[in-house]
Length: 351
Ligand code: SAM
Image (tube, rainbow, N blue to C red; front, side):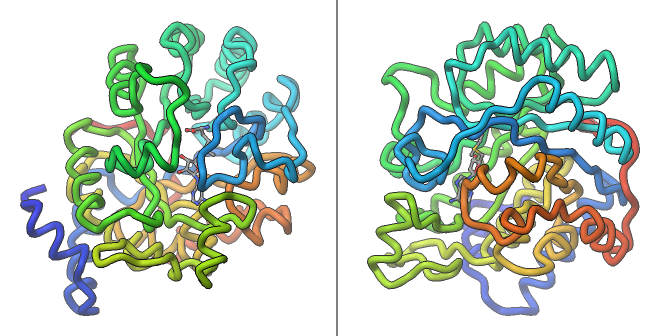
C-alpha cells in the first residue's frame, strides 16, 4: 500500500477530521481505480445457528442456552437462492455456526443445486472444517470461502476464540489451503475487541496484504449481553459500541476506528472485494453509506427468512428484531453514494 507500519499506526491513531477525510478520499480513489463504481450485492442466507464453538464474543456460542437453535432445510436455502436470483444478485453467501454434525455432502448437494438452478456464485462461511470438506464443496461448485481470523493477536485470539483442538491449522493457514483448492478467499477482523490494541490492528492490515485476500470483512465488535465478553463489559459499566474497556493502546469499537481500518484495508489490498458490513450499519444509522465512501464496494443484504432471522443473533441488532432485510435502504445508500448496483458474480478482478 506504500505505507509503512509506522504510517499505518499514525493513521489509525489520527483523530483530526481533515486528515481522516484525506485518508477516506484516498481509499475511495483507490477503490474507484481498482474495482470501479459497481457495488456488488451478495444475498446472505444464515442457514443455521447451531454452533459447537465457545467464542466469548459471539451470541451463537454453544453455551448460550437462551438462544433457540434452527437449521434451515435444503429447500428453504434453495428458495433463498431463488430470491437472490430474482432480485438480480450475482452471489449467494451461505453462512452458519460451526457445526461438525452438519453433513458435508448435504451442504455440497445444496451448493450443486444452487449452481445448476440459478448459476449464482456461491460463497461459503461455515467455519473451520476438515480439508476434505473444503475440497468436496469446491468440487460441487463453491466459488469463495469466508473465514475471518478476527484478530492477528494470537494470545488474544486464544482467549476469545478457544481452539477446537490444539494442533489444527489456524485460520490464516486454512485460508492458504482454501486458496490452493481454488477458492477466492475472504478474511477479516472485528474492531475494538476488549484487549485488542491499535498496534495489533496495524498487524491485521499487514496480514491481509500477505495473504493477498480476495475479500475482507471488517466490522466493529458489538457486545452481546449473553456472552462472557459482553457480560464483562456490562459489569465494567460499558455496553454500547464505543464504550469497551480501554488499556493504553486499546482499540475502540467505534465507527470511526472501523472506517479507518476499512480505508487502510483498501489501500493494502486495492483489488479486494470489501463489504460495508451489517455490523457497521448496526453501530450507526447510515453506516453502510459511510463504508461505501471509505473504500467498500460490496453489501450483503440479508435473505434469511424472517422466522429465523432473529435467532441468528451473533450480536443484538434492531434490524434482526424487525426482520427487515434493508434492501431498499441499501439501494438508496448505493444511489446516494453515486454508485451503481453491480451486475454478474462480481469476483475479484486482477489488474
Ligand atoms: N461460523 C463461521 C465462522 O466462525 O467463520 C461463520 C459465522 S460467524 C458467527 C460470522 C462472524 O460474526 C465472525 O467471523 C465474527 O467476525 C462475527 N461476530 C461474531 N460475534 C460478533 C460480535 N459480537 N460483534 C461483531 N461481530 C461478531
